[in-house]
Image 1 (cartoon, rainbow, N blue to C red):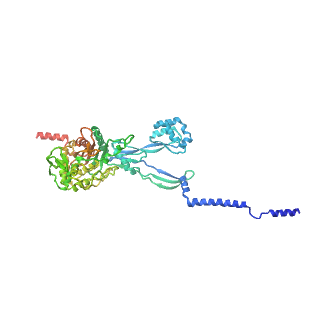
Image 2: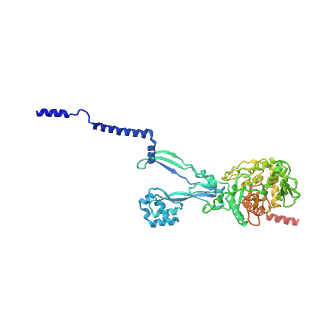
Image 3: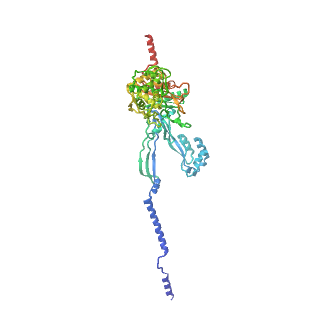
Length: 582
């Protein structure tokens, strides 16, 4: 009985289906594995780039092959801009704080003293954010100073190599050369114009490393493009002489500013370009930004009587006169459209040379009014007074010359003696270079060019030779006598222009100008001197600009070993003795 009951009990407790818990566990397993498969599919198929990027950031490195900025040289190899090695101090704030570096008070005080900084500000810059990994402490310090900081052994303070631009010629060539910023990038002058050439391109080696930092695969290897030095057309000897004479003239005549440009008339090379006042590019602290501009290419002025040779040339080119023509300037004044044109006195009948020697407004006015208007205006455009000179210098002006159709007779008269247009000193120098080289308008360059440049003929050679001799008379017999250079024949023209006032019309300030070429027998150089707003009793171009021209031209010709073609004091003395003996 008992056995039968036990058997019946066993039959009733035997399971007939799978327990519900089994299904729950099985479902969870499928859910987990399904999630893993879905995640893997998402990562591998839909969005694989994120993890690839993370992996690459961990294993791929770039090794840069940096190069120093190349030098800028004058035509003889003299260094005008060079890079010198310096160090930059920086901190890793996380390391400084983790290693309790801020507690080293004496060392931080020594660091602040050597850098000339406030110690509390210095520590605050480093210790305010413990998660920060980089902070500049000082840029472009000397290697010896960096070594001193290293010996302080402040944890988290490091240095790295950099270079700093140095300008050996200082203020002499500052406006032309320009300067770089703290990151060694050119931001003014030739440093900016030729920045890519001076810097080159850094090489990069891209490789993959393993967990122990070992290189296991080279992914890319880009070679560096080496920086190239820029050799200028500038002759630093002439540049220094021009700056010295200009600086002395500005001080002597109490002028606001000035410029000097020296050109090789045959090659179009700029041998000197200086401005005053200048600045020290090695220490620009406190220098107003307007002092950085290169006035020889950015500033314009009405050239005044220095344009009269172009009026004479235009008349010769048009054929309305010949080189022996006589022009009657009597009675010394005339009215055109109700406005007066006059000379200081009645010069009467003048030759073309006499018009230039006496700087006769009446003479050039009568010449201009006898020329076809379009032909006359066209000559000014042909000379390049509405275009850049070809140097490519940043900030160069194209001048101001209206191309309007209607010009009154008085406006044409004003143009004939240098009013009604505004040009830069460099543009004026190119015009006088065209007179010196036989009538070619040359594209100018500040880079040395052994082959020279080809110019465009804009004037007849015979006419330029005739005007060149007339301009020689201006120096020997006229108002340009202060531009004489002992031993050399010089041709040139003075100019004194009244500056326009801010309120309109003309004011009481002047610009003194002298432009010329030498030696007349075989012209080599064209020089323009501009003295802006002389403040003393002397303000005419023949008084303030011609003496500067004389000294710069004389020195430049000697530097270039140009043989004399005129009389020296000794030869004059011997000639006088011979004449007396005769």
